[in-house]
Image (cartoon, rainbow, N blue to C red):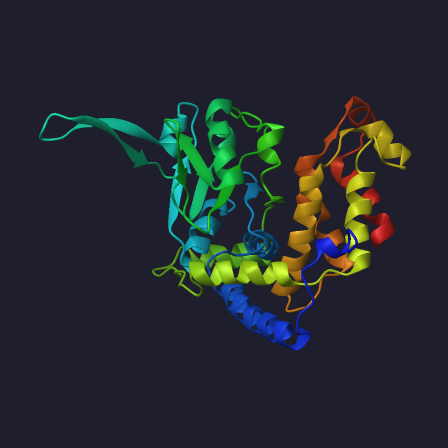
Length: 338
């Protein structure tokens, strides 16, 4: 068996797989429609967030205040039927405020023992609002939870509910009172999604719909069990040889040590690691399923390159001096795949 064979699921009945994908695609179309009734002008953000959840990952939403980032997370929790909890990150937030803590109790016989009181991280959909306003110590408290789906408190491991997803919002770093997220934590987010201002028509519809006597409310379409079944289906989607090689070429050419592009060698301080390849593989499958297709294409890889690679690369001073942005570098990396 070759190494390539190990990257793909075992062959199965394509007709059965296609029927399952079509059925799921219909339900996901309803999910998108229901979310679109509450969130205006952010269809691409909705799609990328759903792709992240289908791939079993976490998403970081970046944008200025007032772009419905918090409401998007709340709406997702309702539409997907997930238990949702919210953390408002502030500079004085402590790790125990997220993970939970042990308290000393005394029973009727006078015997003392510790009891663990779970924190808000014990939920299916955790919203970390303005995560970059928390101190680095508190930010790091989420690292183990995001990667291992469990936390360690007082030397004891506690498993988190399944499914478990972190949807964090972040203000632009230019704003006061923010702390940049460490690279290790950024890498745990499957995608970094830029939330931009809505267009004029969407902002008009939002203004009218949200200032009247009634406001559209989200309704439950899927259950957490449905989401887990969809995640398993995504991992069964076959991936063609050209897509596998395209992902490897894209990621490896983004590393100065292995790139054949002079601009990458000159402008990139460090490139994407193996998690970027894994993220592209899963997200491309999820994007295909969201569109009702049985297999991903190179177009999926190109469309997902920026949200997956932006937070996994860094430019050096030469790039800043030359006016080069990360988007410029990623566009150059994607050029052979387009």
